[in-house]
Image (cartoon, rainbow, N blue to C red; front, side, top):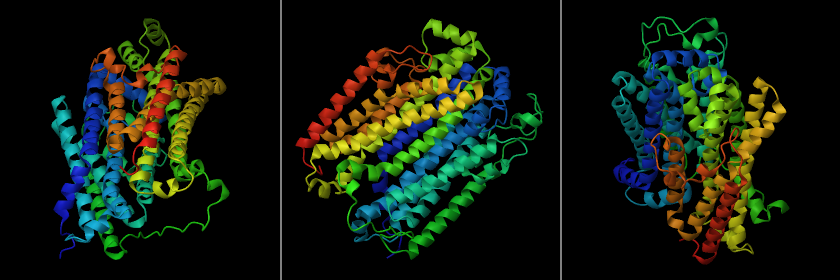
Amino acid sequence: MSSLAGTGALLRLAARRDRILLAIWLYAFAALVGATVYGFKKILPTAGAREKFAVSAGHNPALLSLYGPFYGSSLGSFTAWRDGAIAALLAGLMSVFIVVRHTRADEESGRLELVGATAVGRHASLAAALVLGVGANVVIGVVITAIQILLGLPAAGAILLSAGIVGCGLVFTGIAALTAQIGSTARSARGLAIGVLGAAFMFRAIGDSVSGSGPRWLTWLSPIGWAELTRSFGQAHQPVGLGCGASVVSVCYADQGPRWWVVALALLTAAASVAGAALLAARRDFGAGLVAQRPGAGTAAIWLRTPLALAWRMQQAWLLWWLAGGLVFGVVLGSAAKGIGGLLSSAQIRRAVARFGGQAAARLTQEVLRGQAGLANAYLATILGITGLAVAAYAVATVLRLRAEETEQRADPVLATRTGRIGWGLSHLVIAAVGAVAILAVVGLGAGLGYGARAGGIGSKVATLVGAGLAQAPAVLVLAGITVALFGLAPQASVAASWSILGAAVLMYVLGTALQLSHWVLDLSPFTHVPKLPGGTLSGTPLVWLVLVAVLLTALGLAGLRRRDIGT
């Protein structure tokens, strides 16, 4: 029997298992690119406005580290600047989740052992996961290319931008296949792959933000950097302009035409990674990784003899990574607030940012138009709002760990002891709630340090922004409460429904104003009721109501968990 026998059947099964998540990923990429093109058409409608923005952004290391340099002042160039690196990062993350889920995770859970007992080849599961990962990236590339062309961008540039994003996804499809052979558990395989992805983003950020004499070559070491180095909408013979000089190298346009050959770097790297994964898969033992799992102690330490301590032991690495990333994220984006006024020079752009930041009152809009402080507040409120949505993803994933423990039958030995269902459930919920609050506070701390270091008054800015970050906590707790309620009352639908509700909240936050959704639709999202701080009016009433709703939903979920069958 061929080692690839049954690949087609496993591919259809994997696609069916992932159909909802793949649809969500596809919609997220389409919304990201479509909203970017539409937004730049509205807030930077003329070439002159875009040129002024590019000159200012070229002086801002924080924005360069986040998005990269400009390669032109066209609408397509701005779309590539805004979405190239971010979309490539997301494509890599999606690829890691897909491949690890259908290789190492299924092997760890015993599914592949059961499937392997049938007429299925040894490498069929790896081949199916790779084909699914490649197919998902290609479909996303086709869709975002079509969206760019429909919105008026040149076809050649749209294809090249999508090819750079898809190329990064293919690279991490291969890297995830490699780490699935190296790690002995799904968590370790995902951690290794995401670690490589984080390092790639860091190399790109450093290479893009340093001066002309710095190590700009670091960008070439990053598959994420390759997506921007394609210069998808660049012009080969565009004259030098925008005040280019030694200090503003990032906005010089001379000889910055498209680089189709950069895509070949991604394809070759992906092919080499896949070949390495196939070679390792042929030589390792089934169920084992190249890095063996270390055996634990024969008896648990005293501090591990409670459900909460066990939950902390399981979740601590996950939380610590979030805290470290949140601090870096806050410092980088907080440091950009000082120069945000220079980037957004027109009144039209300032009004758009103020609306997006939630400052709808006429008085606050006039404050934004008169000075820099209001605009910086609107920018920071926007950043913290996005942070709240990201931290909600942490809370949802942490709560859903209960479902994973249940379905993988690790909850049974815990519940066979004196630990009750409510105590077991609360142990993970405490980690989710306390962890979410801690991440929000750390992001606010980083933003205050970054903003205060450039604008002065670190102490006051840290206090203000930590409070503004914590204001997002009630909305995050509502999302966590919804997840608990679904886990207790409808466990089989809890995973898909929880992520779908979070996705709907993200779309309402990002596209609600642009799509002109009615107020009652926007009010369904808990983040609509959070005060937009700093700069907005703080009212405790909606925050109290959000906390009460979160408590009620959590109580309903725990009551359902107490009464239903475990493992259903």
